[in-house]
Image (cartoon, rainbow, N blue to C red; front, top):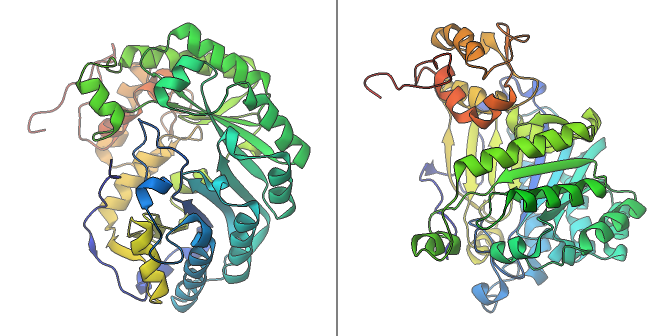
Length: 429
């Protein structure tokens, strides 16, 4: 399976130069760094991320197109980032967060990940209280590797637990033993790392009892942070083909809603607070600051094949394949394939789309006239919290389940719901 195509956009300059428009409001935006590590031991059937196994890549044609040389290629892009941001005249803003995702970043030696963090420190700067996270599979770490990461400046690890039920993991094609999760959490704690657990609900064949068992197992580990995402069957994935052939059942939205509600109830009872539709933290300090930067519209530089970046309303994306990425880096040019400069209307839409997902909500003053007028109806339907309205739009639990519909109403793309929560599309849409 090929990863999804990148958007078209406009051609990106070979030197990565940014327009002067990025300077507006730069002092009010934080800088984050995302480092994409595009390697996996096996490809899970539901995954459509830009990742590759060794068999899919074949023999490396260039240094940097394989795991062995990847850190050096990515470090060159980090150096490019430092030059581009400096030449754009942006104020000095050391990175406040760094997030290593993938793929499986911990397939690289811990020394490689630490060296890449060192490149961020040298070329972009690293805030003294920076949050530095790596994703990891439970079977891709050891006590020694976690200790090396912590000693090198990492502060968090996010384990892809997904489920504690063997038959659910088998459907997802996850390779780890669920009994290993509490073990790796203990190792991370011993190393001094904060811990997040990622779970997926709605897998075909997963019962509500299975989901409860997974959540009980996750909470027994006492993580600092929990993410719970509804499974999405992306077009072109192996799982998509399995569903279309009738080999596994299609997803059931009502089942996923019930599982979300159960997760939220169990997390609240255990003392966790939701801060974004799919994310909960033990305390506000345990929330993932890097992801909050995305939802608040901060700046971030995405390093690696297929990585996306955003600085001051300019978005760009790198070439997807590791070999193409390595070739651009070896030639001394930007790996960006395309970019777009968002206009005011596009930025306003994204602001609503992203900020409404946060527990802090969206200031009503950011909405247009139609959106502000729709807030009372959203409250009456039980989608928006009455205590926060009319000055802020804060989703209720029911509203979180219908977050996309709330956004469409707030943008005037759909009529406000009736008191029973039913949405009707206006004529012409």
